[in-house]
Image 1: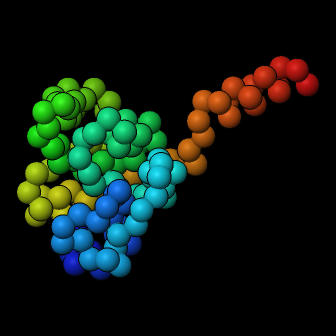
Image 2: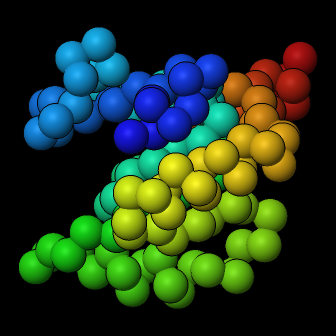
Image 3: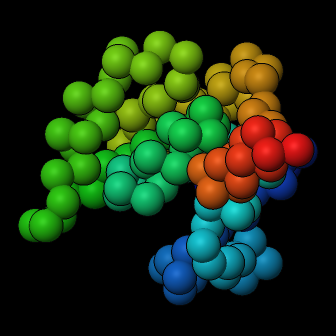
Length: 133
């Protein structure tokens, strides 16, 4: 639905296996996903630990549909973080039409894109080099 509603946007489904109904031309497999996230203007997904905190760390707008799981309280995570991080756009949306509306709204808001992802190890090595040399 998102690809149909936003034909000018490059919509991709990044997942371990293609979800039911996902057009094959939109599906991509890449692991770890965090390597792809900096190229996204908006991420749509569940509220699993990885996607949730990776989007937060990269400050990528996240339209989230928390899944009901026995082993993970995604709804609790989402609603606990709403308003805590005012600079990170986190938008809960459970109905497909609400997801499309949220993505369109975030894209129109021209949220500033973060710089490239750099993990703590790279940052630490750079700081050590600066101290030594």
